[in-house]
Image (tube, rainbow, N blue to C red; front, side, top):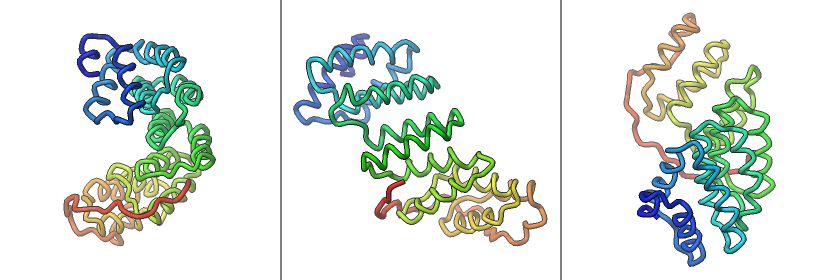
Length: 240
């Protein structure tokens, strides 16, 4: 696959991916990264790849990972409408249908385009298809919802995330603290406490709270920048 991609032969590379799928071989991350890089190198490449997969689907089963690579490259190009239309066509190409990685890419696109409505549609799709979310799923759903004027859905997903044993990424924590501090929401203090418990750096959130909510600074459990620490992401995930 990598050799054919290097030679600009996308169709053969995709054909090899389908053959691998048919014999139960799974491409490694390096190979998939090469495909995604190729698709990102040319704005027309994702559509070309999609048309090639439609042709290949008449001859053999197309793996979900191939469609995911196209969706991810479309997200990289920030072509949100094409991301949605490609997802709608996924079932016609791959008998396996979408997986959690598909939806994680879709939620990233929704976040980048402030499209909570579509994100909630995709969340309902996950429930319908019985696809279990992972840490990244919850993280991106939180980010989709936290920028809303009414951001209670973000807290609902954050609650499900913590119950499942997952932890938001540092940047997500920072965004949540910033939004809550700006809104004078007491939960900003809870988030900082949780960051301290996890050993996450709190310098940026200290600055956010000091700027937006100076009268509450003394109540924050600041203990200095303790570094990232080790965070367990174990636990059983629950459905969104």
